[in-house]
Image 1: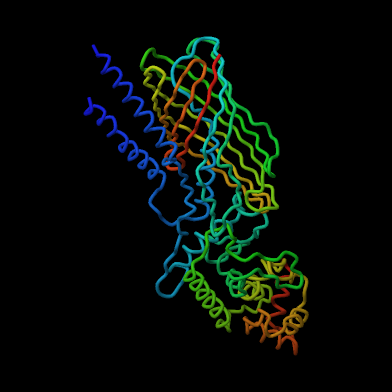
Image 2 (image 1 turned 60 degrees about the horizontal axis):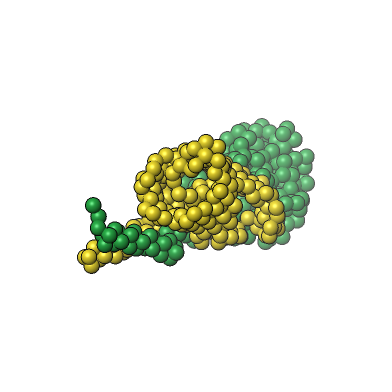
Amino acid sequence: MFKHIGKQFSIFPRRIFICALAALATINAAHAVTSLEQIDRLGEVYGAVLDYRPASIPGPRPQGQVEVAAEADLVPSINNRIGAKIEPVQTSPVIGRVRMDWSPISGVRLGGYLIPPVTVMNTKALLYGLQAEYGWGENKIRSSARIHMTHGNIEGPFSAADTSDQFFLDASGIDLRSGWFVEKWVMYAGIGLGNNRTQFRMGADGAVIDGSHVYRYAMAGVGWKNGPWTLVAEQQHTLNYLSNVIFTVTYGF
Amino acid sequence: MASDAQYKMFNMGTLLNVISVAVCLALAGCMGADTRGSEAPYHVLISGTPTWTNGIGELVSKKCAVCHQVPRLPTSPTNVPTDLDLRYEKTSGAIRSAEDIAAPLSLGILQHALSYGMNSTIPVRAMPLSYSTPLYTDEITALETWTANVISAENANTSPALSGNAIADGALLFKRHCQGCHGMYGAGGVVNRALRGYTGPTIATYILATSTSHPMHNWPLLMQFATACNTNCTGNQLEAIAAYLATQ
């Protein structure tokens, strides 16, 4: 019996190790860069930050179910240096979203979120995301295939205090997630492929920097479901760009 | 079939797994963003005498020509000079190229903004811009050495193959001694006045009126031309330059 418990405990450092590897994977071997590479990369990182990939457990939902979820997307510290300059981008350590999903027929889930263009701290952001998901499976193993898209238009003083710059994002992706359900607990993981177009317009200089990338991403999460409530903690990893964590509270009815 | 004890143990194991993942996430061990902001700027190492083919070409292409191209790139500032393409060493046709930046480099554009020029309305910002790829000290030294060599070669060329045709000679002289600051066709450069429409004696008067600290004095041949023109400008190089500019 204790041997068995010991085995379970032994998984703990292994997870830490895997976690550390995932963090290290975001850091490429250092090599010399040009400012255009830095600008392009910074756009990609912010694109990944804003990409709408809601944290939710996979699997089918019953027909007619509506889910309302509050998400807290933890944003890591971002180095905004370009050339010899630290760009004065103000990034919130947490991005909050309220999303809503609906299952018009069993297994299918449609949803999205919207942040209206309200100016806060000199920054005006219009952001919305949509997703369509098909879930299948019963009992212990359940899966979902999902497509999602994000549109963002953010205006603010990103390059200097007294200028108005703009950042545009159009992103979309497709992913597959599978989860292992044990009573109230769910552990799941998935992989996906995304692509985006970013554009940064400097207000003062008039420079326009376009970016377009295809990227792979993966996620792993833990969910706890109790009646209409579901709590989810999900690790997301956008290969080469970003690792972030999302916490979600969902109420379904 | 699992016994109750095994079933409970299985649940405990699952719970431990869940807790371990949650702790791992809570520790935020998997948070990070690779913007390349912490990486060292691109560095061009030059050994020996810096020439266009020995390092300067790569340096200027990588760190200057990312903005200074014709036609203007969308990624360039809107007020970048429209007749300067630093992908090339030699000026050809209507587009100035790297040999023409010897003048602003000698005026210290790598250290400070330039505000020379009586007609200059737009101060020229120090290069590279703060958000551009920075220059290392040894790269600045190499650029200054190359600049000095370019200017020295221009000044050493005291007997240009003048054809006797004032317009053709004027074009050659203007390209060699003037357009770096005064722009193509004398239309006004980024740091100085438009010369188009001036006569030889007028140009000479302006040149001789400058103080010895004025960057014009870096071009001693010009001072000689002006001194000679001030006495008798017939057939003088400044007359040729004025004749050329009158055709532009």
